[in-house]
Image 1 (tube, one colour):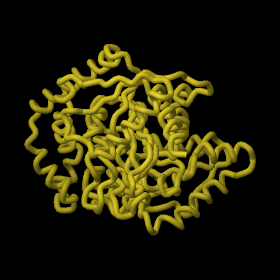
Image 2 (cartoon, helix red, strand yellow):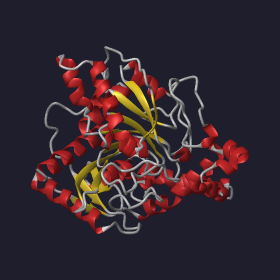
Image 3 (cartoon, helix red, strand yellow):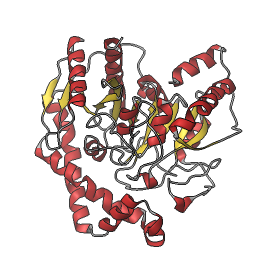
Image 4 (cartoon, one colour):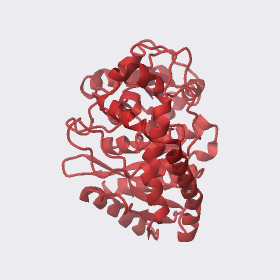
Length: 418
């Protein structure tokens, strides 16, 4: 995989020019894209800035984010060849930092569940996940060092885990969603895909103008860790549970004292209402498409929006009230059990076989609803070579602690698999 920090180190040392760094991505795309199908389109003649902290970094942009230089088609024939006049705010920020939005990455239609044609580079007969399928697959295939995705349920964390890369969903609102096709304004969150945790932390720090989000130069010490299994969900597959247990053993051996934490009933209630909030908002956000182009919506999305018409404002308002109570209680849970971060599952198991499904987001939806920062880290693979990941979660606004703990997990597991 291409590492953002490695490329920048070479550029700063003068052993690689920004143009040559972009050429590395172009060569990798030419080699891998016919097999992986992660990209919608590429800029054939990009402008490559010579200066800037992200000069030489090629970026994949999920195709629900506006780009002035490339079409934005939402994964839907409704927007075939549509060309926005302006870049989404996050894309504009990346350009100002010197990065090159080189390609649009595939998305399920309007970032819902109808699968894309993208294949998982770690197992071509398996789904790469969704809805940020192309972004995760492009990083895993070594085509790009940075890609943007979005998460409304589990669309950053799950595909990153399935493809064996790092996925970072920051705190809600930390990255702007201006210029992104809305599905649910309460839930939609912009996220990052990279080869390593340090790459994601560095990109987030630069994109937000908050250097404190980057990894510190000195050892931050051992975080206090709470292990969470969502007992109100269907259980995970044995391989995923075994991976989480391996991480627990590794952090214990490194000096941590992990503790098991059971989530109070309020969080189970909030989890069950995620769909009510999402569906009520999606019915409004996609009202024009539903009203005027119902036949051109994907079969899963079309049927879902049919049902979403029945969600009442009263049910929506009641669901928001429960979600708000849960968000306010979550910091108390951290204090009560004396932990800094939560370690939990990124997905129910490895990437499912076939392309009919993008997988299950049941281990992501609660945390998206809570708005908290989440990082998934690769932690080995199954006997057949499919990646497995675990998810690190911190309090709202505590993104720096989330990436520091994720880097610890990454380091310990890399040592374990040497």
